[in-house]
Amino acid sequence: MERQMRFIKKLAAGLAGTGIVAGAVVTSANPALASNETRAGCPSGYVCLYNTTSYDSGILAKWSSSGAHNLSNVYNDHVIYNNQTDNWIFKVCTGYNGAGCGAAYPQDTAWVLNFTPINSVYVGPS
Image 1 (tube, rainbow, N blue to C red):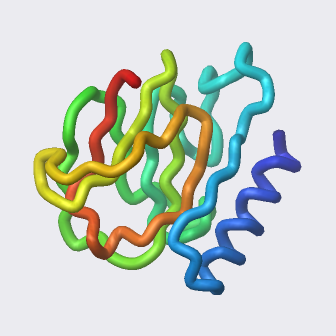
Image 2 (image 1 turned 90 degrees about the horizontal axis):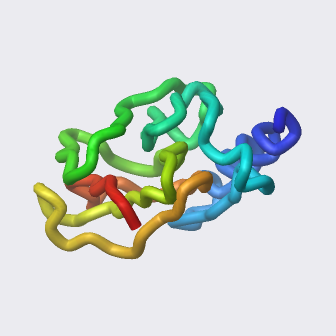
């Protein structure tokens, strides 16, 4: 697990410097262990948005409830990690209140995304 987290940190840092908008990393190879513990500071059952492209930057926001969660003044690249349970997903949306959502991001994955055009994050069942 520690090795996976080091890899994710390196990947996130590398993607931030290349201008790549998104990158995915599955953080749990064993579904039996999926999302049952705090990882990278993100509690089980949450989607966590970090301050930058590094887990070490701390968590800017985290959500566990189903629905759209509006953002304010979130720009540039950030890591977003889905440590949800029960196969819940998240979607990033260009509009407020969950309008204009894109693809679903599965449980147990971390992504580096450009949040400049994003105004809300939807969290819920797949």
